[in-house]
Image (cartoon, rainbow, N blue to C red; front, side, top):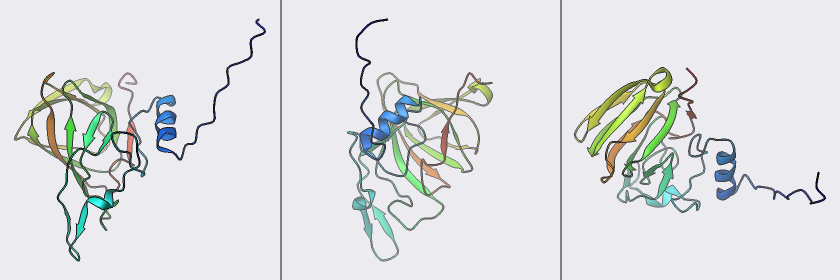
Length: 183
C-alpha cells in the first residue's frame, strides 16, 4: 500500500457531444446505439434541418457531403424524422473508408435496403456472424430486422459509397451492439 493519493476522475457531462462519446467508449459501445442527437465528424453537434429545403410538402436535400459518423461509417445529412416530418422512413448516403469495418450490430424492428454505388462490402452475419456474403457496386440488398451482422469494406484503397434506406425515421436509435462471440 502506498501513500499516493488515488487518481481523480473528472465527472463526465453525458449531455455534451464529447461526454456522450466517452460514455459510449467506456461502455464498449463506441459508435453503436447512437442517440437522437447528431454529432459531426469532428464531434460537434449537427443540426440536420439546415441541409433541407422545404418546398411546402416536398422536402429536398441537395448537400450529401460527409457531415457525420456512426460505427466507423461516414454519412451525409440524409432524410429522416430529424429533418423532415417522416414518421417511418429514413435514407442517407453512407461512406465506408478503405479497410473500414462497421462493428457487429442488430437493427431492432426495422428493415434496411441498400444500393451499393461504389466498391464492395462483405457482410458476416447470422448467429456468431459465421456466414458471409459479398456485394459489389450496382448490387441492391435487404437486411432483415434482428439479423446480427458486421460490414467490411473489401478494399484497402477505395471508399465504399451506398444509399441506405431504413423503415425507421430515427436512423440509429434502434440499433444495438452484437457480440459475435456470444453464440
